[in-house]
Image (cartoon, rainbow, N blue to C red):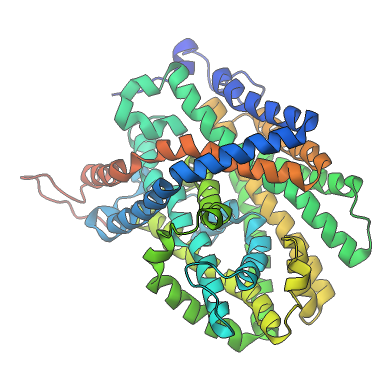
Length: 530
């Protein structure tokens, strides 16, 4: 069966647009852009009313869908591991041995796309938060045990489950349907095995695409706006530059210019190189802290924290005892990562051509989480070590849930603290840029059903997200926080889009392997393949 897109059926003789907005799916564009615009406008008119409405919707989403999300992430992770361990995992994405980039750059792009600035500020702040207010599952502890439990829960929120939902099973489904069946890289394609052609045309498919774009746009605007507030605080702390609206706007404008330029240059010249630089800087800073920070504490805490994470994996993943705590932590993070799911899967499928199914699943579900958990131990564990040695040294700065203050308190305690603090601000900024460029690029793919979307569309979405972030920070942290809660609300429909991948992922992996001669039907011999 050969799929012909709605756009192609209307304009079959015209090549895909390289510039301008000729190829845009205006239905999806309007359905995703208008709600974001309404959110920003209403926030400006009456921030308290918008915050109250979002808070109510957030609480409802967490209460009704929280348990479902916990099971969905667990099932995705374990089913993905099952596929990776099976013979069908030798199937190659796109049925080719040729890859588009080196393995190091491939993993770098994947990691930088998700972690964003949260991978820096949350890695510093979350372990301290769990030391100050221990997770209810473990209760009050003291000393090293407190550090272990704090890290274990940080691992839960940023580890295997968070990564697996992004592009393991969904990546398999999109890879097969796109490369082997000719369907476009769109969120609606995830539902093609369920609804067939009905979801690929008209308003049904446009609504699916729009909801997924809305979630990821909100998930990107939030960190960009939050970055303005965070870097503004850092500049004031380090250089005495007033942390005022003008400073914050300059930060947002600068980061927007960087990721828009990167998205314009494309994956090879822009996104890939920026991600590589960021990973090298991150590895250098991590090595510095390991050598000159509390080295023994870092390794001891990581080993025991990882052991506790694995031992208590199911109890932590399924904990339902304290709804308020869950809403502030586990369900909040699950909603955030779910919102990124479909577009992250599109992006990973786009850059994974030539990789095996096993490589893709393990890179996303195992390798990236292991690196992330060690990173959290190096930065957050260092903060915990300082806090245990001198109570209040980090927690006093963190008081009021001040994420950038926690980071600055940790980095300034290290040798060469002033320089290290500056480098961490650079790292955070580039992390946000690597998310902004990849998501601007991927949103443009969805808007145009074109793997090489027009540059004008990439520019538009990049600038639009930066502009909305700038508008929201006029409201201070309240507007950005409301948007971050709104992300969880948008995850409700997105999580339903991801659900069929639980059974479609293994089926698509099997079909890929069978078509590539790696497994056989009943009376069909298996071909040898290198």
